[in-house]
Image (tube, rainbow, N blue to C red):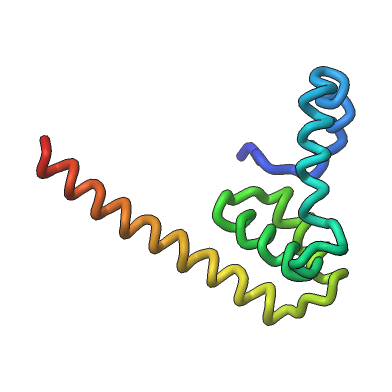
Length: 109
């Protein structure tokens, strides 16, 4: 069976940088806001927010990076678990509200 997510893929990041240098630099600059210190939101919470988003976007690379960074920033296993379940609740809520949209679209059809 093929494995689509492999952390070894990250070794190709330099190739991506060479192929689209300006776009890559833009991504790097945007990505820096997650791990920065000195914002109104402390670093631990920035990482937990990023982790919640990673759960909803289902990005395994982001899960790995932000779990490690959250731990380094002082997050506990309990906070990691709660983050996953909060993200799951929001994703489920979105499915329910999309269900409402589907009903409205059905009624219009």
